[in-house]
Amino acid sequence: MKAKKSFGQHFLNREDIAQQIADSLQLSANYQHIVEVGPGQGMLTKYLLEKDQNLFVVEADKDMVSYLNQHYPSLREAIIFQDFLKMSFEDHLGQKPFGLIGNFPYNISSQIVFKMLDNRVQIPEMVGMFQHEMAARVVAAPGSKTYGVISVLTQAYYEGEYLFLVDRSCFSPPPKVQSAVIRLTRKKELNLPCDDLLFKRVVKQSFSQRRKMLRNTLKPFIKDPDVLQAPFFTKRPEVLSVEDFISLTQMIEAQKI
Picture 1: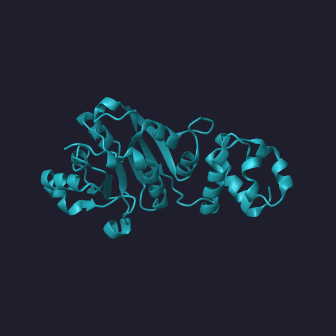
Picture 2: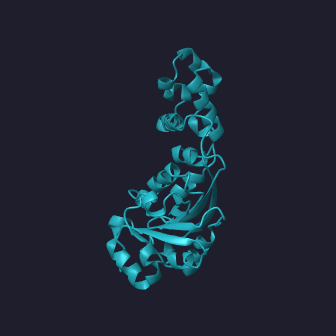
Picture 3: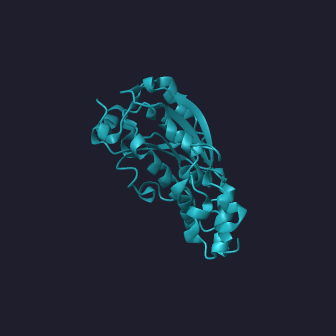
């Protein structure tokens, strides 16, 4: 069965890598379900089926669904034929927590991360294979060139770990870029000590022109223009930690900077 460009499919062809990805889930006792995104021909799926947790797979390609039904009959009641980005977790899992895992299609990988963040109450852990550049961005530290919006928003709620590189030769067909696997483990606090929506707006606005100082990018949020002369606003967004962005959001809320 050939990979389809429209679904961003690149099939993993290394059993040892699939096993390593499956084993990267820490499988906390806090959840009894696993959701795999884009199982394809089941290379990763077979190793997830060995876990004690209940496995659900979400697949948008009807040909792959037929393949999975034929080759993994035990999964038939757990195959969700749907676009992951459009699916309702509550329809299939209720309010139950689950670990999220997958060899994520490159073309929607950032959207998968944002959907995870929006549903963080149900997702204590994620292990995902991304395009290497995307993986690096998600777990990047302040001060690095790859640190940006997705880094801050993800790390506000999850601890990120870069696990290992996966060479392009490990896929059929091989992608044009290298891949990498990361793990995200949710922090204890599900909500920030500031308004979550304002926090997102501040982060996105700050990085909208990442080479400019905050006094230029954050003007729309500050009522008193004299405040923008404070030394803090001479900084650029890539040097701010998650805690700095939280403090900045709190100060904007109070307008006492």
